[in-house]
Image (tube, rainbow, N blue to C red; front, side):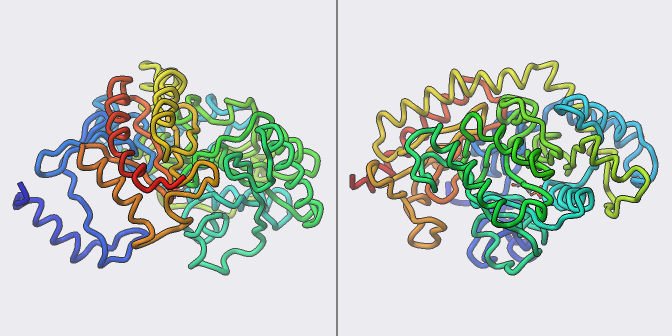
Length: 450
Ligand code: PLP
């Protein structure tokens, strides 16, 4: 039926009158009121169910309303809801210990924030003060958050309206074999040339002026760009050679998303700083942070760290992180995520690519996958232009609408659809979702001209 419930009408009315939404022209949006959620599904007020292939903003790694995670928050709420960062607190101390134990190498202290952007802001601050240098190398095709420094680091169009931003950001190209900036014809060439490009960039910038190189271990919203084997090791070696801090932004890639606790584990790399958020507690309460190497922590041993947040290490958020890590272990969620990628999602998307000409590329690992939609496989012309909006973006809009109509909530960005359901989604649920993608791809195929 097209008649909405009174509840939904009231929510829409109040929302449109008073809620100012992210990234949007306020007059051109019509947000769907959500009534409830469970596992990998959410429901609107008409009782329509959506299988969530986006995990909201790729953060609900544990699925919705996990009873033990909800209970842990309730229990902490009954005990102590808030306490300033200057005190010691059981939930915070335990969360920090658990995260430090999971982190690679000697990364063993945690600075907590409310989310990913603040984590990156503080990581940059630490790197600059630790090295006494100013410049930061950040990649094109990256997203690091929307606060002043984080948006300046961001290498995508969301940065443009905020320019000129923080000084000292130098841009470089990371590996992207399907659309290589280096005209590479193999993964190995892409790896070698991307590293050579990074070395040359450092040489002309003056490596002694560079505090940090920041990268997303696996690039998220800008395309699920999985680095070729050897790339991260090469970046680590460049950083070691020149005394540069390596910051791995694992806000999206960490905590199970890539089938590992941290995506760097997949390549056995130890960065100097890891930033995290999203999957650490699946966003049940806002939480992010920086995991800090012993050397960098040492810089602030006898000298104050000039940064803080009223809610750094918030007890509700930290209690939910402790519970979430426990549930991941009990339920084998990391292993499940790895298995889903290797044995379910990967093969099923490869099958879609065989049957739909519009699928130009399939890539990913764990529960982090992308399909790139094209009009021509030879030229790789994207289904919609880079950064398309309005009428130009219509084909992707039609594709997304076809998914939603059939009860699948997709994650689309430019000419891509990502497959990023909760890490707890069952193989059967994933395959049911991919069956809907299969039907919706007929829409994209109609634009194929190759
Ligand atoms: N870094 C990465 C890789 C992200 O994907 C995001 C969010 O999408 C952020 C940072 C920013 O996190 P937040 O929105 O919690 O500030």
